[in-house]
Image 1 (spheres, rainbow, N blue to C red):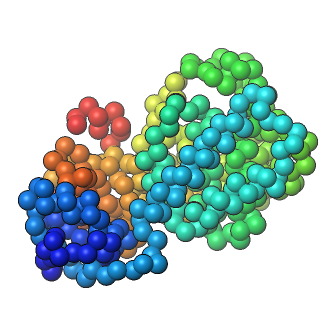
Image 2: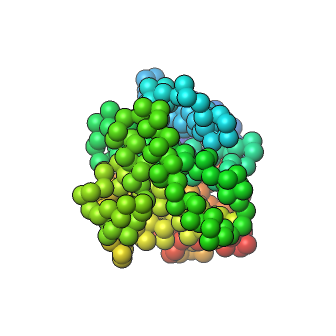
Length: 364
């Protein structure tokens, strides 16, 4: 491993291998530029040397990790406002067209096709000005996840856009239900749960009335159908269910079980993924669940983890070379900005298990 004087590293340099502090903690991965702010922080903390197996270089045309994340955050902020407007009672108008919505989805596709993990990091980093409603947060996450699965399955762009539009509107029928159901912060009554079961039909009728493509309308109608015939509203099985609906069904279900609701606790991201890997009741398409695992990796971005050395952290990026060993931001350590480690089987830096958010916060 080579050592480099902090004073000698040119601002904007990209190292061809991870850049380390004290030969253990990662300061920058190969797609993160060495910034003036980082150099100043290191020198302030009396770190005059850093280490890397690689060499620094300057590439003016490269899209830096920081720039990709900024682009994703900017899109996400605008997208969140757009989805919030869609789910505001009375705001869905007859002049809403598939073409207009498709342009919004095209913007998401451009970022996701470049690197869908950046979008997951944007989801982790974004702090909305106000608490998002269940429908809005569920729709945004489900849509991004569905598009990422579509990219993993190598769907062409026109199909990705149809898939994204369907994911965006898969819960739109909920706005036709009584408002007390949409803003619930309690466990629903039996009658209210029965009413919710009608939302795929309501979504289908609404989009059909707006002349959305048949494939999009069919997907929103079928997204609660299951491979084993145990879904609704038509009890379809296997090949009777459209691919878009299968993808949205997995995305929608994963978001639902890993997000907190007023009437239930969330399953952590890792165990949520294991639920789909097991697929014990054969509810979900095998190819789609494999794509979900490929997209999220065994330790999804945002997961809280406990390391073998007793330290805690949160997964903030993937390791494409070995998904079992993601990059983790440590908790409870004096930081140079932020301290990351590349998890590994050596030196007690492997992940022992996942942690719930409550467990992580209680012991921090």
